Structures are given as structure tokens and as C-alpha cells.
Image 1 (spheres, helix red, strand yellow):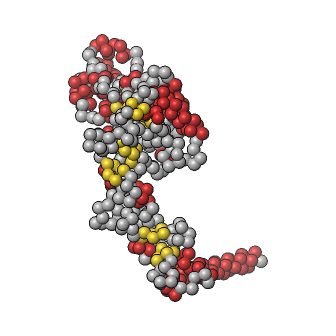
Image 2 (image 1 turned 180 degrees about the vertical axis):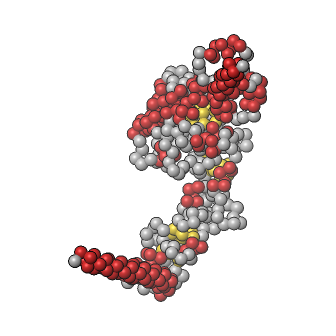
Image 3 (image 1 turned 30 degrees about the vertical axis):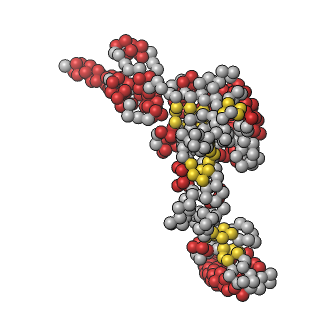
Length: 438
């Protein structure tokens, strides 16, 4: 009887250990897994397929003979025209590592299937995970900007995406004579780095040469595209690829118009991307009349509550408060810049706050200066500025400075008193020790 019980226990133990190592792939019918995967976005389907894939072992062949299993391709699907990590939760994409990206690309054979890859929100990768794309003949567009469409391109803190790791992979793609690459979007920090990385500059030159060959005889509104600049080497838009929509990757020149005379392609200086009229609607900046995307308006809204003006990012930056970071259009400008140091810029609300180096305009008809408090005080103290209005303006600043100094003096006195008390205590201890020694 005892031997039967021990055998039964051993059998149960062995079964439970097998179940603990058995994957979800083997426990559930394939139809259920496929149904679950159908509710997931494309990148999530691949991650799900990888997660339920059983570890390779000698028993895999035996299990495959014993029971039918759904193929992995039926779970993650076969249509991999576009792989956009912006389709999954931002928090999840931000946690993905290079190993995760590499497994996804290998799992779906991205080098031969994916045409457009967008690494939206993958801010935790260095770029080594893109190695499966080496010598790809199918990839047409790679978005390395790490941000989605109509989002500001500058990220803080700077992501770890490395030129050293990514450029050799891109080099292998453009060096393949049968490559399909037509559009690259680079990280803001690569393009705006000063000085520009030599390796990045050399790659851009080779990529530009490849595009010229590829776009030869590509006509656009009667003109050959290669007669235009394809890659920008100017400081402002360095590394931006012109004449290609960043979403559909179709080629246009900036002179192309529809039947109503509307431009078919525009460059948005706010998100620093090109869009065709089919992929994004545009507005004109009310200050400089440059085009910007309608969907970029949340980033270009004037701080004035009732203002409806649309202003491009560059024009807004010229009216940005250094204290509260709010931005105004030129019409509603509530921001003043110090005309002496040319550094301090502050809005009227912040300029009235205590402890802030505010910027004020002098309304004296003979002065009319616009200075920050520090510059105005410096000029008055040196005798360079004798304007009574300016002196009255800095009086409150002087009072605040005096109050601050008084508090510092009081703090020093308290510290001196405390140190004096500590010294008295030490002397008393020394006296006691001396008496005990004698």
C-alpha cells in the first residue's frame, strides 16, 4: 500500500514538473491563441508569439507528432509591410531592449518581409538590436527618430541610440545592389550635434549618392528629382531628406501642385518632417508664413487663452519665457528680452515673482529701456543709468536683496553661536579629562 502511494506521489510530482516547464503554446489549442492574437497590434502579436514559443529541446519533435499545433505565423500574421512600435503602449515601447527588438526582427524575418520600420518610443535601445536588418533587400523606410508623426523631434534625456552601432547596419543595406531603401529619418541629436559626427556626415554623402542613382529619370511635375537637393547639409535642417513623404514615402518636389494649385508636399519646421497632402493637412504660420502640420498645433499653441493664431515652433521659441516656459505668438507677445545681456527672457507674470530675475520695460520717454533686474541694477550702480524710473523699478529688487542678506547674516550668527556653544562644551570636556588624569 505504501509503495503504491509513493509511486502515485512520484507520478504527480513528475507531472507537475512537466507542466511547470510546458509552454502556453502546448497547453492551449491553437485556435484560442490565434483568436487572442487577433486583438493585439502587430508588434504586440510578435511579442506574444515569442513569449509562447516553447524552448527548443529534444522533446519538441515528439510533441509535434503527438498533437497538432498552430503555426507561429498564424499567430503573428504574415503581412509585415509596416512594423511601427508606436502602435503599442508608449510605456511598453520605452522598456524594450535591443534583445527584444532583435528577437522581433528575427521572428518575422524582417530583412525579407518588412518594408517600413518605425522605432517610435523605443528610447531604451542602442541600435545593436537592428542587426537582423543587415543586407536587407525589402526595407524601404527606416524611422530612427524615435518619435511619432507630428511630435517634437527633440527628446530629453538624449536616447542612447548610437551611430557606432547603427551606421554599419545602414551601410550594409545601401551597399547591397538590390536594396530598396528610399527614405531614412534620423534622430534629432545626430542631426543637430555640434560638430556633426564625421561618420554620420560620410554616411549621408554615400546615401545621397545612392538616392541620386535611384531617382535618376524619376520625373515630378515635368522635372527630374535629382536636379533638386535630396539631403540637406545645411545647419538648420541637417540630415533631413527632402522630396519624400515621411509617412507614405512617395516622392514629390516642392513645386508639385494638385489640380487646384495646392502644394502636394510641405516641410513642417515644428516636427521636422515632410508630408504629402494625402497624409497630413497643413496650416501657415501667421508670423513667418512657413507651413506646419495641423496636428502639430498642440505644440504650437499661443499661451494667450483666447488667441487662435497658429505659429510655427521657431517663431514661438523667440517668445518663450525662461521661467515658466510658456510661449506666445508675436501678436500676443507677453515676453520681454533684456536688451543688454540678450539672454534673460521673461513674461510679465513671472517678472513680478519674488526671486525671479524679471525683465521690465522703462516707460520714461527719455529711457525706454528693456532690461532684466540684474542688468538694470548693474547700470544704476555704475552710474551708467541715471533714469529715476529705472531706480524706482529696482527699488523692490534692492529691498529683496537686503532682506536676503539680512537673513543670511542672521543664519551666520546662529551658526556662530552654535559653534561657540560646541567649543564651550569641548573645553569643559577637556577640563574634566585633565582633572581625571591628574
